Image (tube, rainbow, N blue to C red; front, side, top):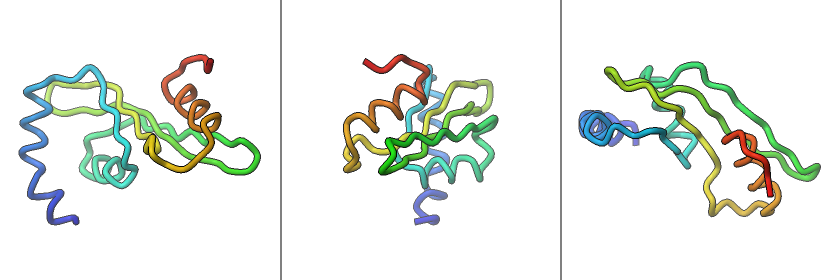
Length: 100
């Protein structure tokens, strides 16, 4: 809930400052939207990937907190029931890698 997210905000900030991640990968688009609303993200780019039957959307940008500024990736859950090819293509697009 929104209340839970707000209550855990200071813990989240302290944790991120402590671990100093090289990048952040988020499997929950709603959490990504919340981070954006709070001003943690910038320069977000949405990418739609389709296989003709179905499309999925992922996003990437920059996560900033205090002096930390790292890439953030908002991707569909690996458990999402979509074809392996569509999932691989989405991940390849969002992470700028060539699919196998």
